[in-house]
Structure formats: structure tokens, C-alpha cells
Length: 180
Image 1 (cartoon, rainbow, N blue to C red):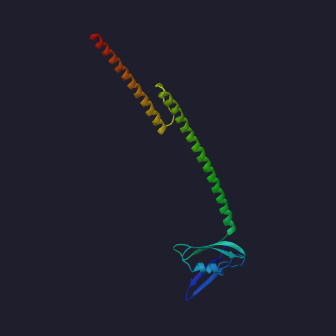
Image 2 (image 1 turned 60 degrees about the vertical axis):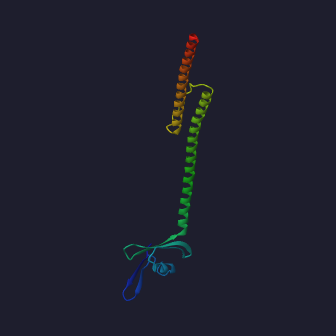
Image 3 (image 1 turned 90 degrees about the vertical axis):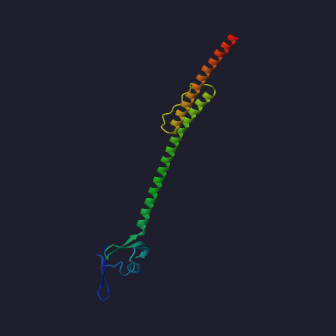
């Protein structure tokens, strides 16, 4: 349905309306339209027309003298908003579940690597320097296992040097004993 209202200015303002197909005029006789007609800005309001609630919109079209007016039944808006609200809630729940699953997966992977590292470090503290630290991860935990492997290798190197040094001291002590 449509209603065309034409405002002509000659000596005075004259408002002409083209009626709807059934002969009714909606906007021209309404107070909300007359108030919006005076404004150059977008006008929105909730109005009551023919016993029903509507959302009234009056939008000036840039660079023309035209304005677009419409009445949208509030029941339509409410049902659309309810649909959007339901969809938003569904997406938020799905997003929350996905975030929870991702967080659980990541934390279990971290926990698994740290548990293996702690078990190996316990064996190292008991004197077992044959422990190897490894992970398939490519993050800070990989860096940690690489540093631990380098530390164990350095400790093994120091132990080897101390063994050589001890052997040299023993050999020197035997020479001193033989000389004396």
C-alpha cells in the first residue's frame, strides 16, 4: 500500500494526498506525521494508529525534497527482535562450548607435557642423567624441553671433565708418592 503526499508552494503551502487503493489517507491527517513533517532530520516514534501500536519512521532523502514515511507494526519488530535474541543466545552458547573445549584441550596438552617433564626431572635429581626431554609441541614447552636437554648435556660434560680432572689428580698424586 502507498500514500503519496505532495507539498506545493506557490503563494501558500498546499498539501495534496493521493489515497491508498481503498481510499483511506493514513499520514496526512495524523498528528505524528504533522510533527515529523516540520523536521529536517530522521524522526522515529512509537504511535498508535487504528487501535494498534506501530513504529513510525520519517526519513528525508538526501539531495531531494522527498521524505519516506512508514508505519511498521510493533508486533513485527518484536517477533524479529525475539528471533535475533534467540539466535544471539544460541551463538553465544555454541561459542562458549567451543571456547571451553579448546581451553580444555590446550590445558590437557600442557599438563601432559609438564607431567612428563616433572617425572624426568625427578629421575635427574636422583642422579639419572640419561633422561631425555621431548615434546611434539612447537611453543614455549618445546623451548623448555630443549633448554632442559641442553642443561643435562652440560651437566654430563661437566661430570666428564671432573672425571678427567679427578683422574689427573690421582695420577699426579701417584707420581708425587712415587717420587717421595
